Structure formats: structure tokens, C-alpha cells
Image (cartoon, rainbow, N blue to C red; front, side, top):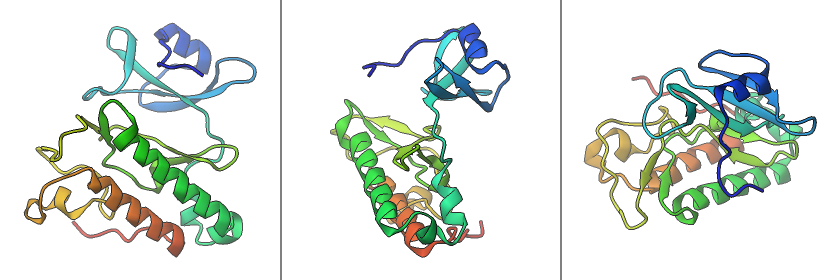
Length: 196
């Protein structure tokens, strides 16, 4: 297991995916046994991405064949598809992932977009938190997060992120989003979208 990200050139990315392009996710092969998903970024914002070729940026992920949790929540019958024990394992796995982001890293990583679309499932249906576009790095001793605009998806955003008079934004904003995700898992339906 690598302890740090591997650096790829743009030519490597094109070879891995057998394609080029921007803003799209491609399935590719590092070897005959290792499948990857490559997201070529169209617009670079913040500290996301790893670049080896000037302005070109791409993220290389483990390929996860079971798509996102959204697929199972949207079906309305995920308890019959996966079973309650598997759903419980998925929920615990997501909680462990969030705990790692908040406590296990050198810097605290606040995701700000925990939702079914951003939980990918591997071949054993083990969950992986993905899509860190809205994420924010903070020091572990920083209790309040300063933000200039709301981040996240309506229906999953903690009230204090969206409406400032609810209080300070803390890492617990991800916990709120996780709670909404649990309601989706147990309820077997899409989260109700709030009119903006």
C-alpha cells in the first residue's frame, strides 16, 4: 500500500484511460489487475488535485464497481437488495471514514458534502467517501471554521452552514450531513429537496 499519492504525467493518464478529455471520469487500468477511475478536472479550485503537467490536473481513484450509495437509496427497496446487516456495515464504514477525516489525519478535513452520491461502494459494498471539491482543511485545534459562502447540497447542509444565525460552523456540520444520510438509508428514499 502506498503511503503517499503516486504522481502521473498527463501522457500516463491518457495511456491509463485510453482517452483524453476534461471534467469527465474515465475507467482505466494501471495493470491487468488494477482498475482505476480517473477524473480529469476542467476547472481547478482550491487545493484539490495533483498536477505533473502544467495546468492539466487529474485525480486517480480506485475503481469501485458498485457505483454510489445513491443507486441503492433511490431504488426504494435497498433493504431487499442489500439487507439490513449490509446497510448497517455501510453506515458504520462511512462513520469510520468521517472519523478518520476529522481525527485521523495530520490536518482535520471537513468534507461539507456528505450525501449518497459521494459514497462509493467497492466490490464488497465497503463504502468510500469521495468528491472532496467542497472540502476544507483545518488544524485539529481549530474549533470554528470560517467560510465566506455556504457549502454542500440542500437537504444535507447543517443549518449553521447555510444560516449564520444558528451558530458557528464546526466539524459537526459533517455529522449533521451524515445523520441526514442515515435517514435516507433507513427510510429508503431520496432526501426531500428544500425549495431555495
